[in-house]
Length: 328
Image (cartoon, rainbow, N blue to C red; front, side, top):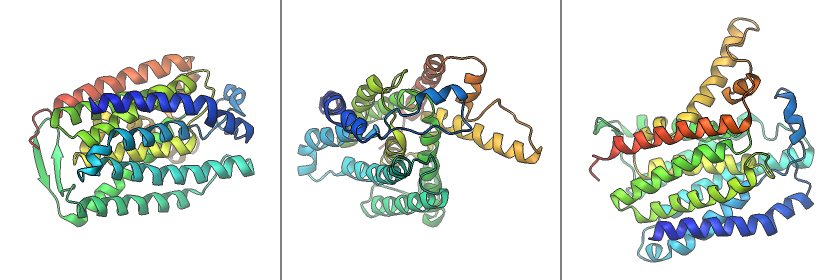
């Protein structure tokens, strides 16, 4: 019941604040998105669409978990707060990046090195906190096989930091079409709600439920044609929240399945760049990340989002099946 309440409350807060406060404020600030020159030419029509819209669902999620999760907090369970703070750190990094773009009218924002170092520091601090709180073990749980592979703490920490930074940036790369990152992340949130319900992780379930409600509400503004983009503010927060939940559940390998779209998007980009350099100008895809390839093939944004979301939903269902026999 708490998870349903968190979902509904987050949906309502995101809708109301988004429509009457945040979106009008972004328009007044002229916080419009610049469009990359290397992107599809028809995306030029999206120039000026307000960005930093991730503030909508971030606010909705935060308000919801503080209210719905208050009894659990009073009982000493702060798991959902740790995930929220972790996501917020990445959201702030994204906000700084968006701010640079909006104020200086450049689409580059922070340098890649600046973002990487900030993200890496955030990941290490979060992992140290989770270890200190006894919420993390170096035993790597493998879904479907229902076994855990023991690792040393140093090896696990390096692996975990890589997974977190990779996940955050993969979600950021996926945010390239109207409603794409939002839509494919909704099944991911539902997966964590289901897992929390199955194992009785109420506080983490409250966060996942709030994330589900916030994303559903944001989709009303972000679906094609988008009235607002989540920006790096939203995509980095979302990536941090998803990675944070996976580690809070102590099952990071589940990200391979629930994050299948994020992985495909990122790998298509890596393959394209690597192949281009190796062959001195040849390409595997018409354009990368892969959602742009399908655009160049004539697919509409709605078709791409629908199919990608269906794939995400299928793999999230498989992931849920793969962890059902885990003992907690």
